[in-house]
Length: 229
Ligand code: 6GU
Image (cartoon, rainbow, N blue to C red; front, side, top):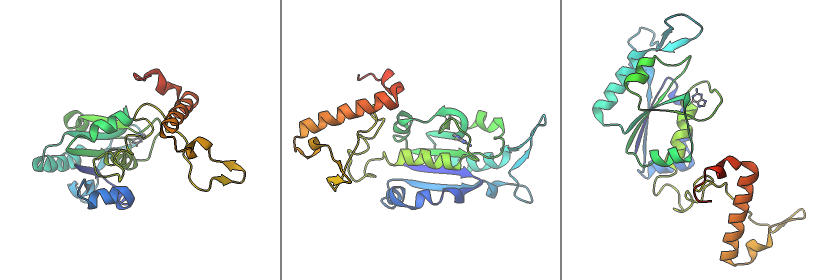
């Protein structure tokens, strides 16, 4: 898979891609991530990428020209399965969307700033608009990093234990059950006996019950549209 990200602040995304799982995924050749600085595509003297909004009002709008130049150049090099604009008014990211996108080959993410981007960029190039939740960030960069992380960890070979992404919270519309490690007892709090019983079937049942219980109390909305239950 290849992910290209266009932004005015590519440095904001360098660290998430430079450590741990996302770093290893790139080193293993499972994903390529390319960050593009929108300013490099500005035709203005001081590399401006924004301008006043037509019709007035507070806030600058990101101009069509730098985005258009950058997108055209990238599209000339390869076909993109999706061109995704990261925006709080997009469709809200969930595990199902991450799963879908993890099956694609080339993704292009656009991270906006200021009061938004010229609507014509969205009309002409964008195939999908994604938000990471109902709150406002100062730009789309962190959202693009979140989306990329959610996708990349699903690629075959990225996680050591291939089954571990499948047992994540949300993959079966259930939250994950509690987990424990040594010591068996800490300040009077003991690990549930069943987990030391060695009875795999009982343990599996216990985990499923716990997952259900947690989901009922914390996220009953997940159970309402759960086809498996
Ligand atoms: Cl994708 N962008 C911004 N700026 N804020 C957000 C977001 C995206 N998703 C949630 N809040």
